[in-house]
Image (cartoon, rainbow, N blue to C red; front, side, top):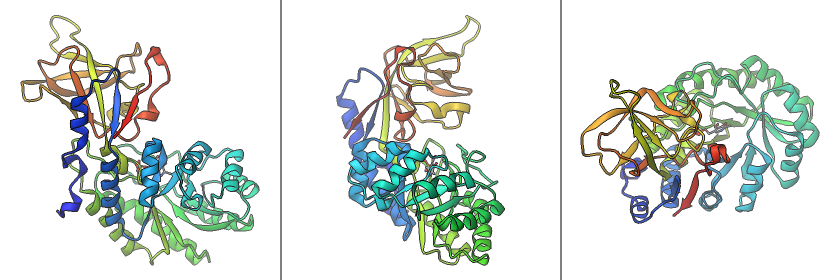
Length: 385
Ligand SMILES: Cc1ncc(COP(=O)(O)O)c(C=O)c1O
């Protein structure tokens, strides 16, 4: 493995020294900008000619956005708020795409007014909105891909089938828009590059049919899906991205522009959550299974534990000691606030009230999933180094 392609989770970092030297009054995610920059370069090296448009939804921390502007990244925005955030950090509106297929008309008008030119759609009604509020804009059509092996699938809700995509390209042109390409999302946390093969083949079929129907498509938007390390082996970022690009090169006749929208794969490993144990208990004298309650839970940043889909790596100062299984739960008075029960988590038997717990690689999809005031708990705090 080239030294530039070591997973950032394996690189000694300033995060640990910073965390060790601090006390934290409430659950906090600490983000390290140097890690983010290093990961950007690893992905960029693998993606080659593809442009990176960071998916802001993964973590909209302004200092992180500013760092990515400095690296030359573009942005995938889901709303007016995310566009305004990127602009405030110095992003070029020509490098922002409005990638949500369900947009408020007034948000489209705002995006158009500030210079955003590229919009996503997966329906005729969305194209009507774009034509009315961003005349002559460039649009790409999002495809629904059937095959998905991701840990956090994004299938069903977004995209349309190939036949409808062809109709929408025609319809966009009839509305005076510029239909430039197609997009899809392979599903978030797609752990191996080979898992892209079937969805890319589906996409290529529609791409070729569109070209045969006279659409000179120039933009292939491959979305996100690049994985983070959560304890299960994943390919290193540069090799993974390179393998995805190799598949694209073998399936498509050199699209002029390839765009990738990594979210999780770019920011997850730049962050560590610091939290603490509130309680360790058992449900009866006969039941030896421990319940460990943390001061962070499903409603305060760990929403992706839903269905136990994303399994975060936990770390404590007692990890060298005897370990045992436990059910891990959050602090709120809601029985849905259980993080891992079907597959219990191994934690030290000596773990006690007040012990610090680190949750590694939690820079993505945590801060913004944190509820405001549920049960009176404050949202996840953020510190940036
Ligand atoms: C349109 C779009 N692009 C990119 C992403 C980022 O995906 P990931 O975090 O898997 O890289 C998402 C995630 O929901 C998305 O909706």
